[in-house]
Amino acid sequence: MRGEMHIVIMGCGRVGSTLAHILEDSGHSVAIIDRDPQAFRRLRAGFRGRRVTGVGFDRDVLTEAGVESAAAFVAVSSGDNSNIISARVARETFGVDNVVARIYDPRRAEVYQRLGIPTVATVRWTADQILRRILPEGAEPLWRDPTGTVILAEVTAHQKWIGTRVVDLEGRVKARAGFINRMGEALTITDDTVIQEGDVLHVIAVESDMDRINKVLATAPEEEE
Image 1 (cartoon, rainbow, N blue to C red):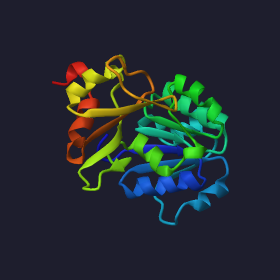
Image 2 (cartoon, helix red, strand yellow; image 1 turned 90 degrees about the horizontal axis):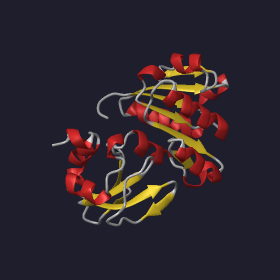
Image 3 (tube, one colour; image 1 turned 135 degrees about the horizontal axis):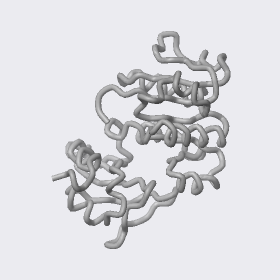
Image 4 (tube, rainbow, N blue to C red; image 1 turned 180 degrees about the horizontal axis):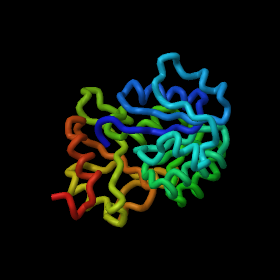
């Protein structure tokens, strides 16, 4: 994902409004949805994005927010059910591939992951975690060595990498995979580890090499030469 993107956020609470401001400051267009029009008071006076009153799983509301041209959809309202339903509508009805939903009940995380909806539980919630998922190339690394050269970073792989052994992926991207986050659990990598739907891959690499790594992983394996 490069250049300006349109991003739709459901929920204009503290996190939703913070994300909206960060994304707009990064040069992206934003639409934010909330059923309570008073919630938009959290947005700064100079906010240029769309304010849409309604529920995020209403198709007309999503259309008004510009979901048909959205590169990402983020559901951060106060209700688990509303968040997951909205994320599913954005993905399944409007074809938005990059969706993230916040949940309050971490026991539901595995169910949602199986539906292909990445989730972030409130116990480990920060706006930065969501930004890593919807703006992976612009996110701060999870860890940086004292010299500032080597980093640990989350990366997003094209759907067609699913079923590929991680060791084979390492050979293609010429970088070391540190671990996989699968359904909220960290897994170490063996020779037999295969990438599955919903996996979040973490790589250890020289920071200056991350643009190349992201370009390789953003392309289907058979297209990358």
